[in-house]
Length: 256
Ligand code: ADP
Ligand code: MG
Image (cartoon, rainbow, N blue to C red):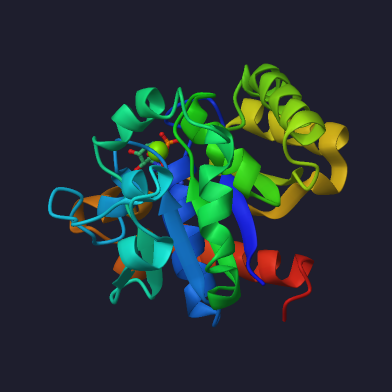
């Protein structure tokens, strides 16, 4: 049965999409069957997996509105080695269209149940907000992976996210837990980043992943080629860190 994880953080630009596509590619490289679900209407994870968001016949939007199944709407990214349930601007409308429907926050969960046996991992890239879309992700997931930059306000931002996760856990999804915090865009030369990293470990203990993702320009260049860094330039430091992170995930979950 698939492990379903949301990559979430209500801040924008913290590395959610980069983490989602590179972890998906890293997991695929170590032999895992992966479905990547893009829940952000910007469709960056879709494009960054080599799927053109403008020419998709069906997307996660159709799945949320129950006019298509995951199996019908998802496409295989041959280059990346994982399956993509893509998103585009149409998804922004789902927010409004779901307002009046029943069990609106459970739509994704219900849809994913039909494919749980087909994958080892489902990774959900969330938008930077606590919207109905993110709520669908959190309701569908067993856990949350939180990418974060080790900057001054990082810990403050985490408090909000942790409270949100607690609320969803209490009211909607008793399975939900924080799997871990992933330090991304890390630059060890910056003293402040080291300090925040130490604070994180003091606060969250082994909820902080051992793997650290360095700031690496190859990871930032890869999306313009429609590829995760892990596929675009496997030898880059950032790519190697994401493959190490994939291995850490598999080891932690005992799925080896
Ligand atoms: P989010 O999905 O949280 O908005 P993104 O993954 O899109 O964040 O990342 C924001 C920007 O930072 C993007 O331009 C991305 O290419 C860049 N970026 C992300 N991670 C790294 C990294 N480790 N090193 C360098 N640039 C990165
Ligand atoms: Mg994003």
